[in-house]
Image (cartoon, rainbow over all chains, first blue to last red; front, side, top):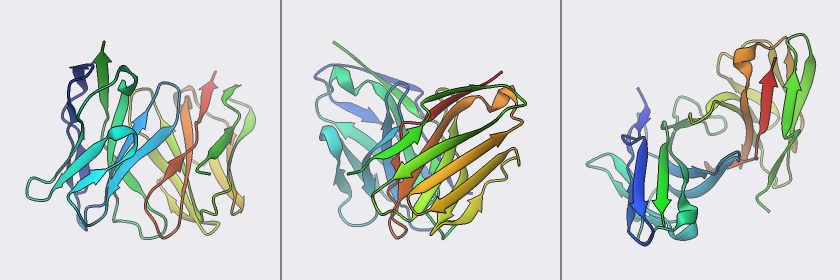
Length: 116
Length: 112
């Protein structure tokens, strides 16, 4: 079965410190991986994706993620957290059951709280 | 322009009402999606349209009826909903040959 796991419900960091939001995956095909962020009462915003190529992917707002095939992980990172980064973060993987369109399987989400 | 718009932003309806949610994008995307999201939970895929044809229906109850009148528009018709259908309904779109989905702000639905 295909799945995405985000082991932490909440991550707390102080402003200026590095942050990591963890994600592990299990897929039947190639791992196409995504990170999205959701602010309160808003839709999801795309941050970055890994399809192929360099294991370190750079995305929007200074975020990056590292693809690790051996550990089946795709952790989201940022060198210096901002209070405005506080939001709900979702990791997602392409669902290979479907070929038409691109269905995604989302993790349960991790709430990031950055304190000033 | 990576904008997906959704109307209305909020909707309150009774269990006997009929209403529709609307989604629009002008990015030339040929795949469009409906998701349902409960508070602090991940989005749950409901329907996928690819080139204006329904390609995925995730066993959604028939009280939800999707429609894709053209490549830019996606509707979700609602009829005889239940209070447990109250949620944020998200629309998304993507290029048919690419995986990145772009989401609208959602319609927050309350069923009384």
